[in-house]
Length: 570
Ligand SMILES: Cc1cc2nc3c(=O)[nH]c(=O)nc-3n(C[C@H](O)[C@H](O)[C@H](O)COP(=O)(O)O)c2cc1C
Image (tube, rainbow, N blue to C red; front, side, top):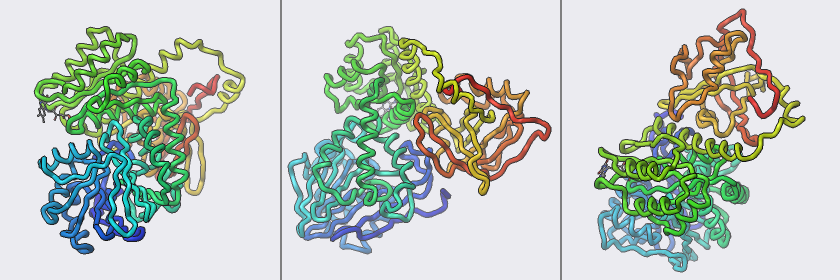
């Protein structure tokens, strides 16, 4: 997606007295970890003009001015009665302050934890706020008698959904969204955005699937015709399928046999971002995560989650030279469970001294815990490379747990089917990809030509591969086809275990392709590819890519082929 298209606010009436205002950022997105998709996003706000006027979810500060301009062209902003907030993001404070300056009579509507956050974010303890706990309604007139459904989760403890019985719109905040930017307001032809919705779920929802299940149960009581999402297209055509998919994806998480307790606190969001990237790395390897924000969780719940988990990861910011009290309490609970056979991990964001992370690490070390990854210390806000490291550390952690479990179950010889499927051969290749700060590579032999016009191929990428985030629709990579005779060295290099964030290309001769991905100098040929789409196929993604360019580097060589004995090996 080019970064050149200017931000704007797209406005469309969507139902009786109801208008959507979508603040569109076309550029690569940085505020949540869906950076791998880089398709921009929209911050969706809604305007209900009945006898009273309500505004739902004004956007963050990068949109304050153009959003207010767009609003002022349509309504008398001084007449707004209510501003309803699906969650309170400090980043929205600038827009809310600007609205209050024009319309000081505004009453805010949010959940109870939302009210605490809002008073802090707007630095005003006397702010007029209507707190919605689930029983109350807000009558805007003309049948818009709004109902509210708190749907708290560790990431957004203050999340609140809103239902309008007049229009049968359910405003779902973070639920059912997608980080994509485009002209399409609704989700007609929704199958093509399935991948984006799934990735959004995997990154943002999977780490608190239990709370998603609770939210789905609550929301089922409200007959919705349309989901007014916080991001991306509104959900109308795919509403039944997406709701069903959310149930199914959540059930997959909550019924997984290995779980990691991810225990953290975060005052300004940096440690939470690290937690999210680590969670993504764990869940993509097929191990479930139970996220626990210790600020909002009862000690008993923390104890129960640790006891039932195969491992735990603890994260904390350093504030005033210490870990915040809820983290210290949680650490005490973890240590008192006395289960030092569980795998542990530690991470945190800090500013200058970082005592909190050191404290957690040393207390766990003293108690005899083993660590699944080297402690991650990040100064202030993480960049893309750090998030990649976190994701890979999470995957390593999950794989260590899976390995430990496998060791306990006896290894069985390959079945007839496994042996027979193993006789399928493919050319031995190395997929290399680089996007801005992120680079990765993977040995691939499950490769096949898939089309001639345009030239295209498929590659099977295991879901937990480090390179996986670089193989979504629109991403570019290079497929290096190895040469028989000189393939062993490269094969060994790319098969060896890499630490989280480790440079895959150290000591390997490469050149840069036009799409920025490395070409291996010793390859037989290379293909510059662009991912068109991908299909979920069991434990792999089947990636279909078209070949945009390519060259044979060694005219006399032949393709290295990978012969195997079993389908379970590459
Ligand atoms: C009031 C306050 C006190 C802080 N004290 C420390 C400190 O003693 N040592 C340190 O390394 N960083 C300190 N920091 C920096 C934070 O650790 C840093 O901003 C970190 O990114 C916060 O993580 P979070 O976004 O997850 O809350 C402090 C920050 C604030 C706002």
